[in-house]
Every structure is written in C-alpha cells, then in structure tokens.
Image 1 (cartoon, rainbow, N blue to C red):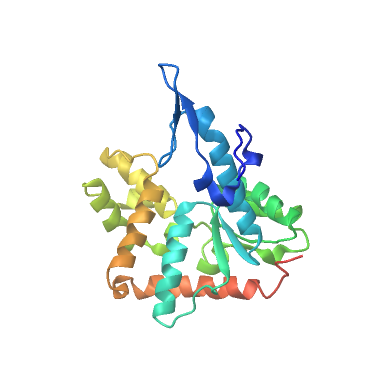
Image 2: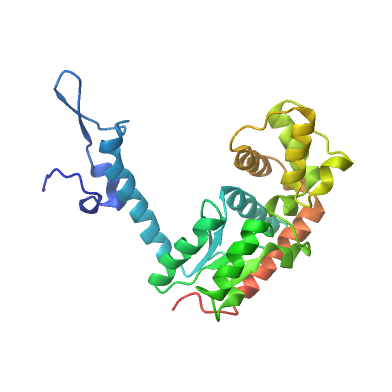
Length: 263
C-alpha cells in the first residue's frame, strides 16, 4: 500500500475517489481528516472535483453514440420520454445512445471539440431559438463542415421555425406543472403570445401578472415533470407529446446511421 499527499487532481484516481482522505486545517491548528464527507473548503475540494470530472469525461469518450443537448432540461425530458415511448412500444432512443447536457448552446462547440479530439463525433441537438440557430450555423460552417447531418435542429422535427424543447412538451403539460410549482395561477393571454416560444410566452405572462419566476425555474420544472412521469402511469402523458417525442427519436436514430460517430 502506498500513501501520499498531493494538491494535484492528476495524481488522484477519479474512478476511486472513495480512497481519498481530504485533510484540512482547523482554527486550532490541528489537522482534520475527512472520511465520510467532503470538506467545504474550496482549495481542498477543487482537486477532488477536477479528478471526478475528468473521470466522468473519460467515461463518456468510450461511448460510440452521444447526443449533446443544450441543458439539463433537455436531458430530463428526453430521457423520461424515451423510457415512456419504449414502454408503449413507440419509437425510442436506442439503448446505446447517451444524452449529455452541455450547460447552454455556447458550450456545445467546445465540448464537441473534446469528443472529436478522441475520434468520437457526437450528434448535436439544438433548439430553434436565436442562440440555437447561431450555434448550429457556426458548427456546420466549421467544426461539422461535411458532417452537417450530425447537427439536428429541433425545428426540423417540430416543423416550427422558433421552438425549444418545452415546445415539444407543450402548454397543456408545462403550465399546470408550473402553476403547481409556484403556487400561483399563470394563464396565457393573447398579448403574451407575441413570441412563438412557450417559455417566452410564460415570461411575458409572469411580467403582466407580476409573478416572480425563480432562478433556474426551467430546469426545476423539467425535473418535476420528468419525476412525475416516472412515478405515475405514463398514460398521463398526452398522445400528442408522445407523437412528437417518437418523431424526434426516429430522427435521432436515423441520423446516427448517416454519419460515423467513431472516427
């Protein structure tokens, strides 16, 4: 057995973080060894976070079929809907497809570059909003030039010029769940529908009704909806939502046959 001390994340085995014992200095000057929990001290925890993150990314590179999506909301909705579609004998994502949220459209390019450096080409799914269109155009002109079929824009599936993943889910699902989460009633009026994007309509209604939308409400709403779908009968998911989801999954599965994800 070898015991050593380090501040470098590259000397930590990210696959076995449980073997690490963080050491911090208490106000009394004594050292404290953490066993079952990580300390809150930023300098101590950084190497652990970096090593764990590196191990996770290395694991992702081993998968042949990856979908890069803009955010965690996309992950929640797509993962849940794929399971429900499969249970209902509808088209779902293939078992070997992995969904990876990127934290925003602007980060998709850099993350795609990391995969390409390991000879793995992920499929990219982008919203049909301004940020998604700008990122899609940039990718197809540069990083994905000649592999444009590996960039799937949501408008191609929903047949709407302006759309986000919430537009696939639809107002009849989103609004009741949002009202339950907020504990207030938000109803869309004609004046709120100036934008084609459902989330923009909700934001306009919230301003009109003087309702405060908390930070991160979109991802929390996605988490609640997908969790509810996992704990109740999937028959509660409207057929039109499943139709749109199945069509998206069919497009994704077909795209993976049109380009080489590895190499």
